[in-house]
Length: 115
Image 1 (cartoon, one colour):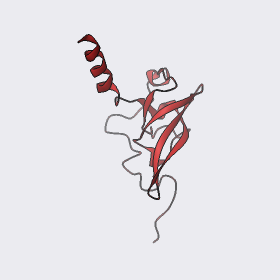
Image 2 (cartoon, helix red, strand yellow):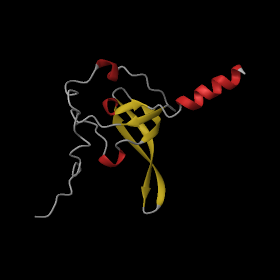
Image 3 (cartoon, one colour):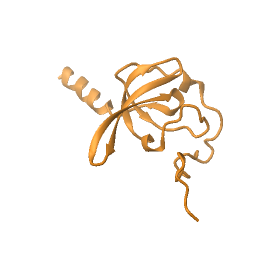
Image 4 (cartoon, rainbow, N blue to C red):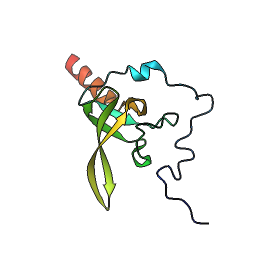
């Protein structure tokens, strides 16, 4: 039998919640403060289908370029035929987390200013 080529094909573990992690989304996720220029990680929440990013963007880090009432626009780098293209996608706030990629850089900056 031929395999399927759907948008959620081969995402059995990617779009599955961990053990004891099921249930509704916390309100703090909806009330998360996001500004233009912030670094965010795209992690699709499988319990919410609206505004879900494509599986190719799952786990990617990007920069916010647009903020609307229920979604954010994110600039993400994508490898296409050997070259890296900057893609601009809109994702609902449930599928986005604040990134910790700048945490060490900011801590080093603060410690350098103290010294």
